[in-house]
Picture 1: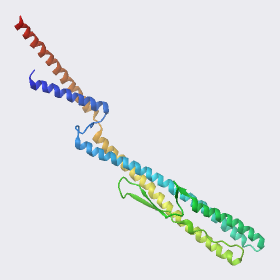
Picture 2: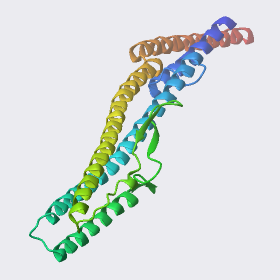
Picture 3: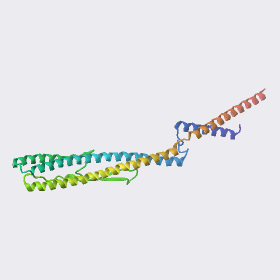
Picture 4: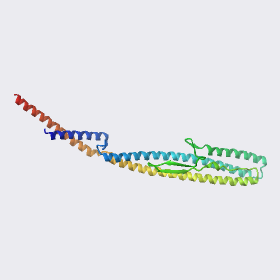
Length: 260
C-alpha cells in the first residue's frame, strides 16, 4: 500500500472516530474543530437563553413582591373601611360622649393595626410600603432591561380621626376618604407593575424558545446524514484495513520466496 493509501486509511479512521463522537453525543459540534464559528454563535445563544431564564425568575420574584404589597394595601383599605363605618356610627345622635369614646378607642386600635401594616410589610427584609417607593427589577438578559414599579410611600396615608365632636366627625370622614383614594392609587400602580411584569414574562418566554430553537439548529446532529457518513467511513476503514493486511501478506510471501 502506498503512503497515500496509508494516509487515506488514517483519515478514514479519524473521520470514523468523529462520526462515533457525534452520534454518541447527539451534537454536531463537540469541539471548536468541528465548527469554530458555529460554536461561537451557539455559545452566545446559550448565554442569552440562560440570561432570559434568569430574567423570567427575576420577574416572577418581582411579581411575588408586588403581590405582597398589594395584599397589604388591600388589608389596609379594609381597615380604613371599618374605621369609616365606625366614624359614621359615631355621628348618630343617639350616642352619648361615653359611647363615642368607646368608638374612638376602637378606631385608634384599627389605625394602629393599619399603621403596623405600612411599617412592617416587607419582602426579603426590604420594607415595601414605607421606603423609597420605587423598585427597579432586572427583567431582561441584557443591561438596562429593567422594569420599574412604583410602590409609593404609604406612611403618610394614615388619616387623623376624631369622633368626639360633630366637626371632628366631618373632618375625619374627609381624611378617611382621602386616604382611601390614595390607597387606591397605590394599588393601581402596583397592578400596572404586575401587568408589565407578567407581559414581560410572556414576551421573553417566546424569545427564549426561539433562541433555544436556533441554537439547536446549529448544535444538533443530523442523525440520518451522520449515520450515512459513519457507514461510508466504516466501510472504507474496513476496506483499507483489509488492503493493508493483504499487502503485508504479499510482502511476507515474497520474502519467503527469497529466503527459500
